[in-house]
Length: 382
Image (cartoon, rainbow, N blue to C red; front, side):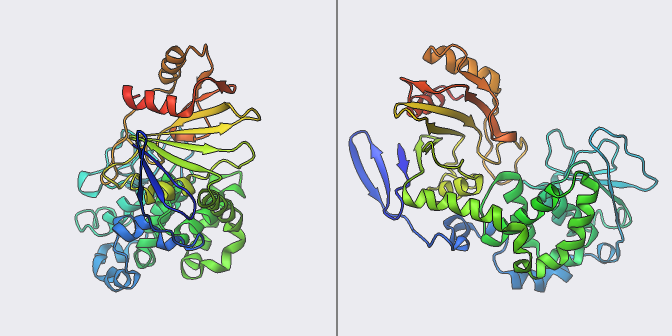
């Protein structure tokens, strides 16, 4: 089955030579909160009413957590943990911590607290009386700076304030770690936090800066537009490109094909996620895609540069709500594709997708289409 986003028109379902039109909702490009995946499930499965969250926040927080005065310590990646109090490693996996609240690979986060993002795990911790007394004055540690790290640590440091904004913080964590697009506000908040990180060469200084501004951001995000507007504009440009048909998404079974012209910017993960969400192929859908093939035409109309990657949440091996993504070795996949299509060493491991990148072509490819590659990946479950 192949699906394609066709701008303001409709999604077409192609079965061999027969085209069946499937109407889809087309909200205004600027209205991200009306994204169909948010309407279907609430934002990331969290109660969609912020007022109800605020009303229940105080009752959800145990007295020990409410009185907790935890401190934060940044531990550079690979450095030994030195602390005189019990510590909680939040998001980053810091060896030696007494409790892990992280979704990183090989974590030992307690099953009753586990969730797909570290921020969700932190909120589960806050609502659990089992851990309250032991860790009310614990040190909170992390070894890298990113949105999920900031939001999860903030939840442990400022639990009452965080619980008032649980929906937003949880959604923003999924933007940063998975490239998802649950709401406009979440996308903007994560972009602001990422901008703060980019302003500092030192992650510890970035955390101090973020912790200082985050309470006000949660109350009045519009006042920090200088921190998010550039990223927000780039993401929105990508979604407009989907709506106009300049960039298209097709589904070949559980493989998504993203076609981009040579003069278009790389489609932002958040825009790609929203497109997949509207097609019922995002990570929270039963028919979630397992692979993404990005295809960009070169100056030659019959030549493509291609990348193969996992969907945004695909780097997390232990998932609670999102669909599990098949693991793969990018080097082995590149070798398999090269042999299958007689491409020498054109496909190589890596790509621009960061943690979800698998392999890419080093040069433009002729005679092999993105659909050929997607179909082979689907058929052979690469």
